[in-house]
Image (cartoon, rainbow, N blue to C red; front, top):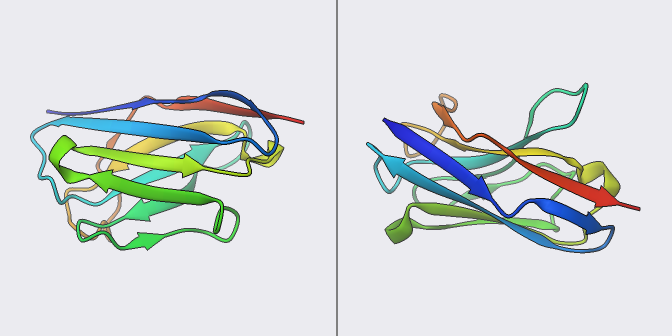
Length: 120
């Protein structure tokens, strides 16, 4: 059994910052790849940040330079620091975990999501 619980979402004005947290528990390895995805109403879910078991990170152009993913392996927790937020960042943000260190084969477990709303 694996459980992912996100926290830290909320309402923020454009230009502001938020930090999301995702705590993992259950039958997992500390070096599993983890990621953050988001989904806005009527749109496809998209990857916004990925971190491998060795700490390598990936970001799409839409968030590059503004978002930073990090992890604390001892706490089985991954974070997403979001700076200079824009209204287009508004979405439900989901934490995900892979059975692999690299995450190349996709994501096996998902959190319930946390709402991030950025106002103009």
